[in-house]
Amino acid sequence: MSVRILALVGSLRAGSTNRQLAEAAVKLAPEGAEVDLFEGLADIPFYNEDIDVEGSVPATAAKLRAAAQGADAFLLVTPEYNGTIPAVLKNAIDWLSRPYGAGAFTGKPVAVVGTAFGQYGGVWAQDEVRKAVGIAGGTVLEDVKLSIPGSLTRFADTHPVDDTEVAAQLTEVVARLHGHGETAAA
Image (tube, rainbow, N blue to C red):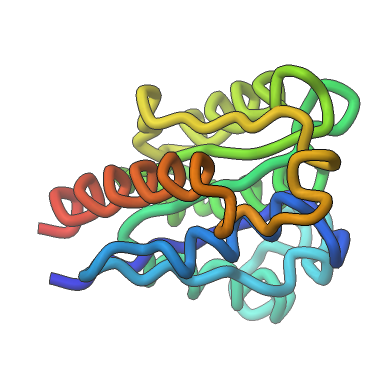
């Protein structure tokens, strides 16, 4: 059975090390898993119930919801901005949490990973993402974690897919997410 994992990246910067981490997840996905990197989070308006009405949902938000509805699992990749979640990722979680009680995360496994320049690798942001996505209905895999510190120096000359240690850890994360996705989809 093929498991579709939707990856959402909380950094919009073209050279983002978190985007590179998501790209590595796409390449390292085990057989039977397909990691799709969602493009377009920057184009989604901030969540507002006034525009979240049938027939009026912005096309970009509808595209995100359609991609998420088709996913069996989620990989959320986040940097840490001022000790917390980047607004673009929180906004995606907000859109996917609706309609209340039946959002796209409901009952699906979610793993949260990331890298940051600081010495803790963005753990505060990752914890906040886990909290938000859990409240939004996702089944957060609390024991599936990957925080990589010193991103700007560690990945200055090496893409995460070419970093042996990171590639092994990320492969394990995606494999475990894949396993949970198979169970959820069955």
